[in-house]
Length: 144
Image 1 (tube, rainbow, N blue to C red):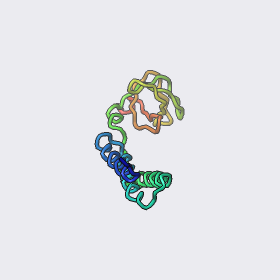
Image 2 (cartoon, rainbow, N blue to C red):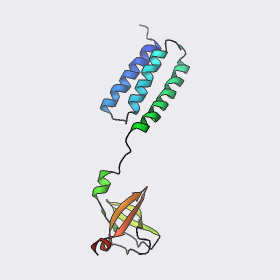
Image 3 (cartoon, rainbow, N blue to C red):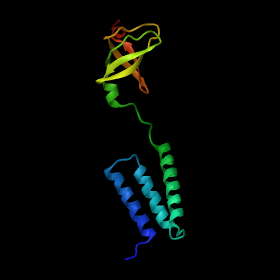
């Protein structure tokens, strides 16, 4: 039984496209599958495996990058929006960073109001997140 590179590329492309149905990979596997199908068709004209692999890598990368332009921007995690309370572990001086306990983990935090300090073990609201830094405000600010 003789298996050609064309058949291997076509099978690999079909498997990668089907894999996207079972393991959502944000269309990465699908784009790699489409690239493999294209290389499978082009492999009739380009018999060298090394050139086929280079073509597949180039097409896969291009398709993945192009598909990102058409995907909606990811919104902030719903889980993060639901949990708005945290508790300070250290004092947060005005304009400085401190630590808060949020969702059972210690996070770096800075007060939204750069003129007020927050005492340790005080309840705070999480306003937003900037990378691994939480921006917080004291609970009493919203009560007044």
